[in-house]
Image (cartoon, rainbow, N blue to C red; front, side):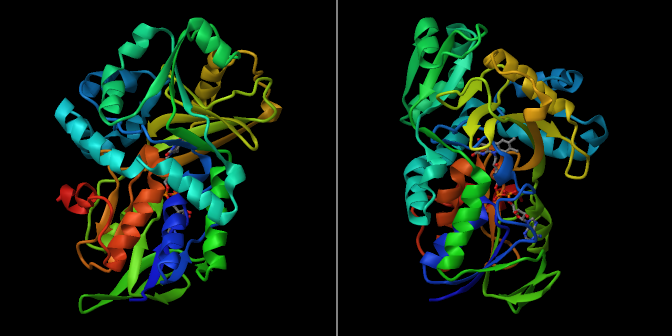
Amino acid sequence: MTLRVAVIGAGIVGAISALEAVRDGHHVIIIDPDSPGGEQAASYGNAAWISEGTVLPVSTPGLWRKIPGYLLDPEGPFSIRWSYLPKVLPWLIRFVRAGSTVSKVQATARARRTLVATAISRYRALADEAGLSHLLHHRGLLYVYPSRTDFEAEALEWRLRRELGLTWDELDGPALRRFEPGLGPAYGFGALLKDGANLSDPGAFVAGIVKHAVSLGATLLRARATDFRVEGERLVAVTTDDGEVSCNRALICAGIHSKELAHKAGDAVPIESERGYHVVVADPEYVPQHPVMPSDGKMGLTMTDSGLRVAGQVELGGIKAAPDWRRAEILLDHLARVFPSIERDPARIKRWMGHRPSTPDGLPCIGPSTACADILHGFGHGHSGICMAPVSARLLVDLAGGKSPAIDPKPFSVRRFR
Ligand SMILES: Cc1cc2nc3c(=O)[nH]c(=O)nc-3n(C[C@H](O)[C@H](O)[C@H](O)COP(=O)(O)OP(=O)(O)OC[C@H]3O[C@@H](n4cnc5c(N)ncnc54)[C@H](O)[C@@H]3O)c2cc1C
């Protein structure tokens, strides 16, 4: 059956969903008030990692013990604005509970793995189809630690990866330095995850996918979706600030702004912004051979088309507060440890802040809403939306079109939050 599908939001999830829906023969209208892949979207400014090993959720056993320290340390990788604490507390409690035992984390990791296990081959197919192969690079992802002991301290993460079939090369001191000669002396051990790739301009990738979907028949409407019109139990239209868009399916893919729309579709979803930052250093003195993540900074350093991007930090502060650019300075401090030859030259540095759309349990919401099965959720990908988007989009479009999906949708149902 040919459907009229409104895709709300043209970030990475909406863009790929729109393409999948067009390929399935549906009429597709993409609704976004801004440019696809523009600076407003998390899909623009992320670290651009495509990791098939991003299985561990952020919340893990024992995290609650670290939270007071985070609250007191304004320079750590995780911070909470004091004024926002009362508002974020219920989310935070759910977040800590979601990772309170190893068995909960194992179940989450298995569900996350279904969304990322085929990420690289899917990106390759998308890039080939849309003429975007120049933006996709498959060189592995390098995790660096001060020492092997520090690597072993993250045993749970690597054990889960092994259990889920992932492999990596371990690089001690000299081998690590031969592999990535510009690394600073602070790092003496590395693990190279082979099932890892990266984009060199994620915003351009999103824009390219949307352009391709439009070339195949999708329509792009510059408008903000505001509500839904449902008659009987069937969806009739998405309302926007520029009038109604008639449709019989709507996919909510508006990143952090999905919360209000989900609410209109009958679901009070606990989704918070984990605000993140990036700095891009144009023409860096050292060009890393691989994307690198230092264990002490928990940020991704990735060579992009505009320079070396350092992306990371988690700040709980809501979506309205202005950026705290001290967090960008923290990223630069870490960069100086990882690649000491790179100079801190303000004329070559660009900064950005964006919103990771995060559920407390590390899993996205994909599937029908409570109020109307014709309105489907496709959001909440948190730290891993680039990695998960191709499989999430396929699942979403299968569910919208009544096809049996290739993976089990149950872990991603919004009903888990009731
Ligand atoms: C610092 C940082 C580093 C990251 N690193 C990685 C990484 O290395 N790998 C990884 O996998 N993930 C990473 N992420 C997470 C990833 O970027 C996100 O999970 C992903 O981009 C979310 O995509 P999205 O399409 O859901 O939302 P977005 O990209 O935010 O797109 C949402 C779109 O919806 C539109 N919109 C909003 N409201 C409306 C409305 N009412 N009507 C219509 N349109 C609307 C917006 O304009 C926007 O274009 C990182 C995130 C950050 C912040």
